[in-house]
Image 1 (spheres, rainbow over the protein chains, first blue to last red):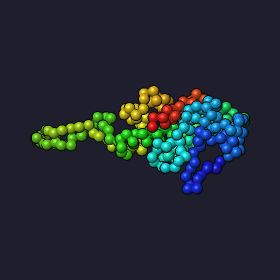
Image 2: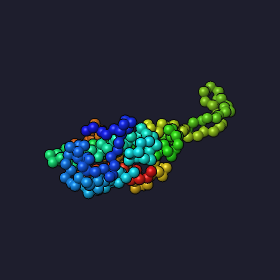
Image 3: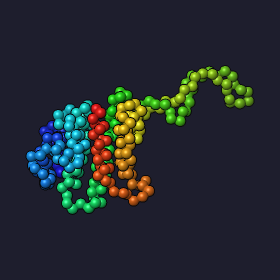
Image 4: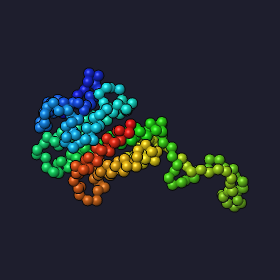
Amino acid sequence: MNRVRKADGSFRAKRKDTKIKTIEKKYGVDLGVRSDMHLGTYLKKNGYSSLSKMLES
Amino acid sequence: MHQDTNFPFIQDSILQQNLDMVFDHILELILVIETSNNLSSTSISSFRKTLIIYTASIVEALLLYKLKLFIKSDILIEKDKKNKWVYPDVKVLHKLPGSTDEIIAGTRKIKEIETRVDKINFEGLVTHCKINDLITEDLYREIKKLKNLRNRLHIGGLKEIEKGYSEKDLKLAFSAAQRLKSTF
């Protein structure tokens, strides 16, 4: 899995509002949910509420 | 500091990016677990162990950062736990004849130990943060449980075959990390 690096070489962290479709496309997976769902919502729905909160800066 | 980070309170850009990369990998591993229909229960347990180890590394790094901020130094000075005395300032009052013994007067104090903060292990970090009221008793207990789970990476010291890592173990790890992050 290639990490997303910005032009200056620094790493781009995933965000709470990252769309599921972006992740599915990047990793070639099917998370079985609506593509416009946000990562934070997905994590909360799947029992990872603490991780969802950690995505809040 | 770059804008896209889940640890904006970390002023050290190297640490910040390392934390983001570890957290990102945790999210990737979650996706692996959630999207694979072919993983055995043993495999899932192993992935959970990996997640716990990575999460513990975030917790350990945040504890270290918190402690450094508190003591405003990279060196921790504390009293020797064995209460070893040192005699910084003594005067010899009388040398006993026929012996190397001496009668002395002066001050003695408990030896102070200097330790580089980044050399303190996980146990030490969580203890020092608790002693200095940087974390609550409840969070301290949760992090200690995470530490015990994490320490099972040292399989050479295990006295029994590895038990599986449950969803509950995983959620405890994530809860500890999230709660610690929220203290910043």
